Length: 391
Image 1: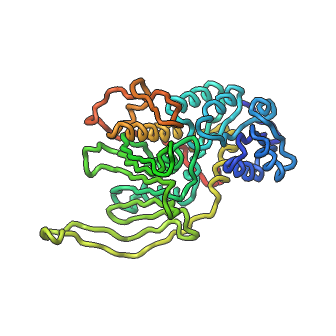
Image 2 (image 1 turned 90 degrees about the horizontal axis):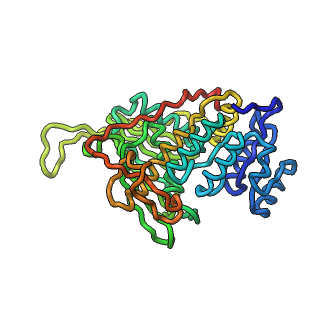
Image 3 (image 1 turned 45 degrees about the vertical axis):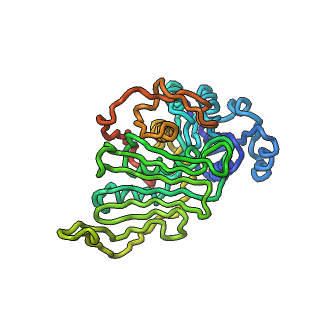
């Protein structure tokens, strides 16, 4: 592992736009960070941010910044992630990449292999996995307080913001895939997706994904549904988990009741007829647990610094990022082919993604596989997330 200076880490934030500026703000108040440098090829954007951080070193490109830093945060468009991260890794720098880790699974694997060879930390910015509300939802599911989990529904909707290099799936769905994988502790075995272009001429602005976590020939198998849109009148950031005993709703926009546990459900009953299904409905109490108000981005960036200092595996490491990218890549392939796609189809020669802005036309795997043989695929268990370690 590359050594860390005794005075603290010098971190460069590459990309001084919306998310880059947030990282700069957070890192300036993070223990263990000695200096935050700003890197952006657009001088106006660089200088606008530099006005708020007058002592911050400023660089027009990564190459000129690398000799002066220990780690970087990549907050640039997804199509640039692999090239920027590889340059830093090959220079022996630790890297935190904003979501998604890469536009393609092959790119994600290159970053994982390169960081292992260089002995540096590679982490992906799946910020919601550091959100106390998501940790609570995971606890409810893992403890089976909700009973047997039937399904998860996720919606991430708003009017915009339209992107100029990716469609709505690659822009918004990484959050939901990351949340659901984290809550369940595994990645899906197959994905089915539908998407359409409405207002945007080049990219799909509305999409629906279905993630199969069991054999999708089993109607009772675990699945999750994701709805993402740039073209909706209402801003929605909601995840619903429905179990046999209770249901839970995580609303990221709620000021106070971000997690609600509803003692609601249905039970099959004997009897009934064609007009009256034999179901018994239960309406119980609603419990609102206390959720800490920690800023997820601050927790995430502090975790990045801690992992560098302790040479520890990040919660959202490269493999975590790869699982999300594989799911997104399978979704894009499913959208094009009009059928469910196994995640094991992603990664070898066969299909080529032609969608503009998605992997720049790089190949996506499609090796033959039997859908009848699908079994749940476990995600490597992350290290226990101790609040005293990450905030």
